[in-house]
Length: 289
Ligand SMILES: [Zn+2]
Image 1 (cartoon, rainbow, N blue to C red):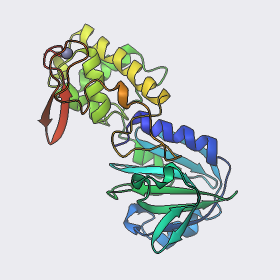
Image 2 (spheres, helix red, strand yellow):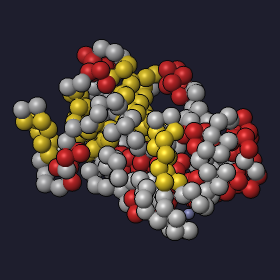
Image 3 (cartoon, rainbow, N blue to C red):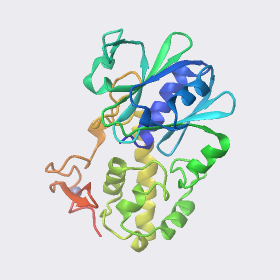
Image 4 (tube, rainbow, N blue to C red):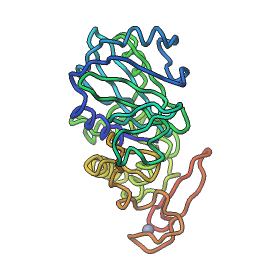
C-alpha cells in the first residue's frame, strides 16, 4: 500500500502537472469506487467544470482542492495509483497513446479517468479495486480526516510531542506505528524500516520503551521518510509515480521483504513473522526487546 512517501511523491508530481486545470469529464467502470456522492451521475455533474486549485496530502490521503469549495479525496488503498498521460479506450481497455512506462502491466488496470483542460488525462490504475474516491465539502472533509494522528514530518512535531503521543498509545510498537490514529501515513514497509534502524524489536510494548528507545525511533522516522520521498517512494509493491515510472527506494530497504537475506548491520538472517495477519520483517539479533 502506498504510504506517506509514496503519497507525498504522487502529490508533488501532481502539483507540477495538473494545478489550475479544469476537470472536463469523468469516466469509470467501477462506480462503487466513488463513495460520495454515492450516485456516479451526481458525482459527475458536480465535478465537471471544477478547477484544480491545490493538491495536498494528509496521512495516506490525496486531497485535490477544487473551485466551489469542494475537495476530491483519493485514498489509493492497497494497489491504487494515479497516472497522468493520454489514453484512448479500446474495447474496455485504456491504451496509452505513447510508448513508455504507462504500458507496464501494473499501470493498465484503469478504473477511473478524468479528462482535464489542456489535453491531459488523470487516471487511477487499481488492480484490486479497493481505492476510495470522495467529493466532499469542507465540513465533510474535516470530519473524514478528524481521526488521523499527527503528521510525522511536520516541522513542529518535536521529539517531545512524539513521546507524548507514544505514551498514550497501547500495544506493540509495530502496530502503534502503523495505527493511523496515532501517526498518520506510516504503514507496513516504513514501520519495518524505522524499527530496524532504531534497533527495536517490533513486538516490544510501546509503553515499555525507554527515552533512548523512543528517541532512536523518532530520529529513524525523520530520516527514513524524507529519504524515501527524495527517492520517489518504493516500487516493490504496485506503486508507480504519475509518469508510470518506479520509485527508487527499493535498494535502500534493510528488512522489508528481505527475509532470508543477511542483515546489513550484523550478518544474521532477516526474519519474517506474522502479526495479526500482516508480515513483520526484522533482524532477530540487532533488534532487541
Ligand atoms: Zn542485524
